[in-house]
Length: 340
Image (cartoon, rainbow, N blue to C red; front, side, top):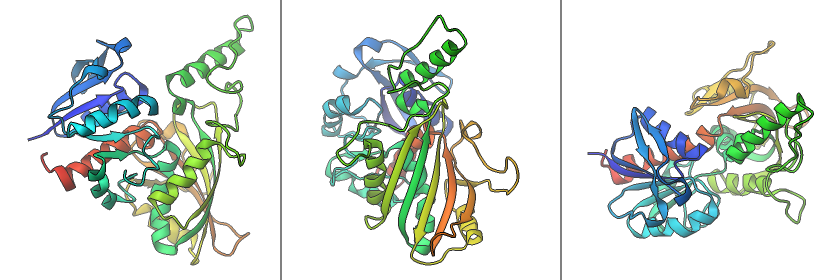
């Protein structure tokens, strides 16, 4: 016996990836529906070897459905998630709307699986920000061993994190560089993204940080440990898919780089590629389409007593969004619903 599953936002990058991963991982589905806004009604999307036609999210009745995967942004989620939850369907939401709600668990299954039981308060589970998700997978096993006091992270985030419009803008601007008669001014991003980097993701806050940076701080504390101090600088780079992060941690106990490497190799969801030679590391191109979070360049930080540096790369459309949501659904099924 399987589950009745709805995917809201099925025509977007993340929604399509959710459908792909549900099929790839053979999630036990008895019935699946693809939901979209009225303007995308009837659009065809793939689910394994099947083709689904999207149905209207606005009029859809969630009664009798077990799980709804939402990838529709905060405003639409605010309207439709409570409707699905009230109908008895557990919502797994990819937007930022519920991440900081004390009554909604924020889950990365490799890190805090026991938080799944908190879903019952609202019938909603939050999926973390893409840049946070991959980082905390690496932080948790190191924190368990040596207790992380402070994290300094710089991110190099791909344009797919800004949706289809972000990828289209990079593509069109790149082409325009070689065709001066067809200038493409910034629209989705604050500056030209082609052949450039932009030290702003989301809006600025009063303290000078951006909201993306604030998200990494708040979410790491909620998922891993509220005592961890986090400071982040988030940068958009001209890469289509795959987020990269340079991470520095300070721990209470000394942690040797070789032991850290061994710990990470044995940890779920992580692939260590760390050779001290040219090309002995992972870049975004190699991680696209993969489930793993890749860790490279693990080394001691000699400027502080107990410090480590590492490089962290992951497919942001997968572990940063769709894959993590499906893993939450699997966790929910295995521990709570138990139908599959």
